[in-house]
Length: 105
Image (cartoon, rainbow, N blue to C red; front, side, top):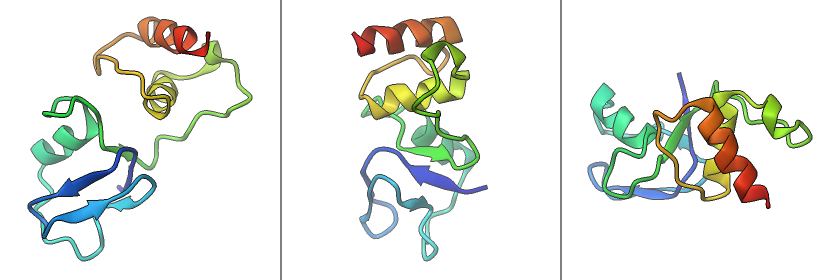
């Protein structure tokens, strides 16, 4: 399973490697041990920056022409992240949809 960087960060435990939006994660030469705990820290907002940094590449990005109410929960999260909207990772789809619609106004 591969990941894509959705927010720029520096991995201080991998020779201060800079990961920029769109980069694959981990880098092919990464020396960091990829633990489940570390991936959860990067995939969720449960870190000191309160933002996710990576996303599973298998989670497809939402079709820009599709109405918000047709987005899946994961597509709504992608949409909110792309628009810099904070949300609770455990939020229900309806709550994410409300946040997304409020951001469109």
